[in-house]
Amino acid sequence: MTTKEFVDKIERSAVAYPESVFTGKGKVYTCVNPYSYHIVKRNETLYAELDGLFVDGMTMCWWIRLLWQRRIPRLSFDMAGMAVDLFARLNGDILPAVADMKAPRSHVDSGSMSKDTPTTDSLSDETIYFIGAKQDEIEATIRQIRHSYPKMKIAGYRNGYFSTEAERRAAISEIIELNPSFVIVGMGSPLQERFVIDLRDSGFKGIAFTCGGFLHQTADRMHYYPQWVNRLNLRAFYRLFHEKGMVARLWQVLVAFPLRFTLDSLRSPR
Image (cartoon, rainbow, N blue to C red):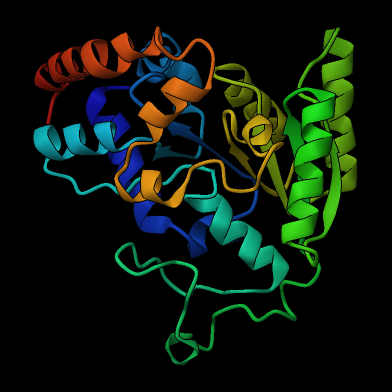
């Protein structure tokens, strides 16, 4: 996957969001950010197999705009991004017909909904499955989600750790048997990307998103980032002071990514 193909895939995914992304079947998506970019480069074949890529991190959005003249929105699976839209959809709260990145996605004018926009009745059977984090963390997160979205139908959940390959295959088989509409996978990269690809290739007909640390972050509270952090786009720096091991990531975000992405962009065919 060349850098142009990487950027093109990100742009197509952003354009398709939300309705085509939430309704296309048998699709798997992940989010990339400045830290994970070096993981993408080491696993280009793996990431090329994904149906779509979204950008988690304003730094990457800015560099794509600078070097490729593409306006890419930040769309990560968390409560500052896609999770808000999907959870509201499954709870019957909002049904956005199109993505409007400038307006708050939590409020949609009903007059703007076309005749093809799904209604709450047509979405009533949609379910969701969560897999990731430690067992106590995923259980706490599910309690948070059920409290905030009581009408959401959760098909099941489990931790994201496997002692054997057989246990991993059994988890995939269980998800396929339950047949949820959506699956959220938080295992860290590139384990989560390989899992959703294997899930799809094993016959899963729904839609899967990777979510990084979302499932363990939400164990304590539904909204991990304060509003002022989201408003100022300081999520990476907020995590720096609240999570272990984040200091080492600064090198990738502030130095390694800009240098490598610039070189990759200059070398890539246009």
